[in-house]
Amino acid sequence: MAITEISSVHAPYNVTDRTSEDLLGFCESHRLVFVPGRPLGTKTEKRADDATAVAERHGASTAQIALAWLLTSSPVLLPVVDARTPQRLDEYWDAAAIDLSAVDLDALNALHRAYAPV
Image 1 (tube, rainbow, N blue to C red):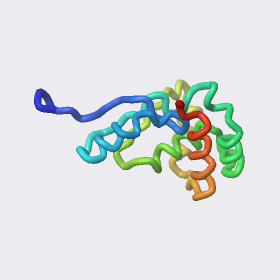
Image 2 (tube, rainbow, N blue to C red; image 1 turned 120 degrees about the vertical axis):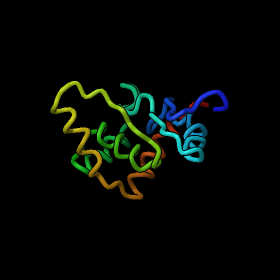
Image 3 (tube, helix red, strand yellow; image 1 turned 135 degrees about the horizontal axis):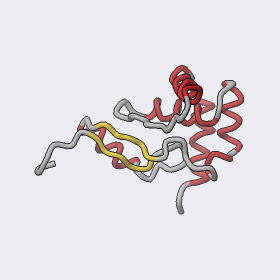
């Protein structure tokens, strides 16, 4: 930051991969935009029952739940997703209206603990 101005940082961060949580904290304290890499997780990560149960409670997809969780995670977080179709973009847009409860967040945090690197 002494060499040039930094406006945003991109690093892996999603419901199951929070290895960049310290970097997110740095971005929050320095008011930098944090762009989470793999915001929807990977195919392996998306198979978890906890995310599916939360999605079913909201009548949503697991991708929508992953985005809703990201949107509650930090005010500096800016998810960028690969929509590919107008329908998929609508699906992702609707994630902003999902209000995750404390029970939902507990289930998603349990999912993180299950997949956290040892």
